[in-house]
Length: 200
Ligand SMILES: Nc1nc2c(c(=O)[nH]1)N[C@H]1C(S)=C(S)[C@@H](COP(=O)(O)O)O[C@H]1N2
Ligand SMILES: [Mo]
Image (cartoon, rainbow, N blue to C red; front, side, top):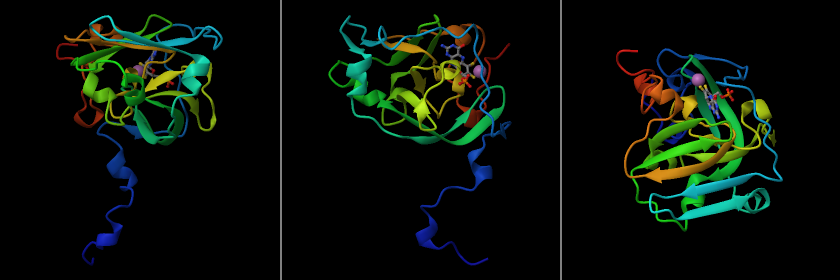
């Protein structure tokens, strides 16, 4: 083989390089919820960001819709071993939601209307790596996949992408969420196979 052509360096990696260890790819979109799908109505929906000092920002559905949106295409990886490549979404970068509130805390918790929570370092929600999405595949997000809005943090296992998300709270200390308290890994990097905590 000839040497790599410099001009090809920007191409997408081969599919195999995009599937983390222990994962297989699927064309389906499995539904995984700890409980029943809650009915979340957009006319009463709000999204709240609150920091550890008690400062908060709240958006209604129409206010949220007026925020700058992006349309990320990303690969997602579920701890139950399916990965789905090139999923397309539309939503607001978390960076935009943190704009205007003091966000120097080290940790974040995402909260959902079904009572679900999941934690991560705040840094993992910033830098254009996380969104609150309201569309999947060019259509409004279906309720079973978290509609009207879910968190999308594709670089971590998919349990971090809270469905029916209602807000994000910032904390000085790490506060394990629903699955993390039940033995899932605190961080959940699919490339390091951080599936479960030692002992589970
Ligand atoms: N609110 C809420 N979000 C949730 C869950 C849940 O039970 N409740 N399950 C998590 C888990 S374990 C996974 S794998 C993904 C599944 O998302 P999907 O059903 O759209 O595939 O959602 C995550 N977000
Ligand atoms: Mo999961």
